[in-house]
Length: 307
Image (tube, one colour):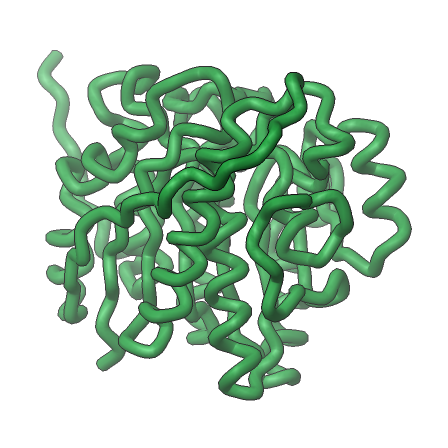
């Protein structure tokens, strides 16, 4: 049995709105470890990663917390690569800049093991800016660009194993800047926005991507942003975009991933408990993670509410 390793990444440097540093504790309080243990899985909570010392660098004025984000990237890349040797790491975020480190670290491990790394990006945003192109200065919008080897990441750790564009699949897109759109068009990314999902369903692109991972014998890193979900069911995120995945669409994705047996690592990101409603977003993330790890729809209890 592959152990599930819970690794806190209380990163709050990727954007100006504070609160994501509370995400790991919210997921713990919502019962993530117990939900996975109930499925018969071996679960180990390794606590929270701490950032490396801040680098001494000159930061462009428009970039928010560049040195802090670089420090987190180095620490999380090391932690992710090490954890891959011991089990299936689940990184508890933290804003999406944490994936600069986690995706880079798991890809480095895969390269040493001689396996191609694949990346499934479940997000309303493409996060394909670089520090040079971002207009907001928020580095949570840059991780895919970094881990796929795009230029412009001066001062960041050298990337040991860039993830090829053709091994990267986005599902749920509905807010992509024009500059990102143009840059993405130059690569062989799998791009699936919500219109595609509305027209043909969410299962088809997920299955097609999983078939490619299986055929290549690849490792699969899944990065799940709260704003992949519709804000009506998951309000605890600072970057809400209407029209996201429904409860059933999200669970279907997780169940398809579980059926495949291909997932080797997972990010849970952008949970801001300060914006939640009685913890329901954290509870939904716990439930979705349980679905990815083997829980099925017929296992869900009926809930009674007082009139």
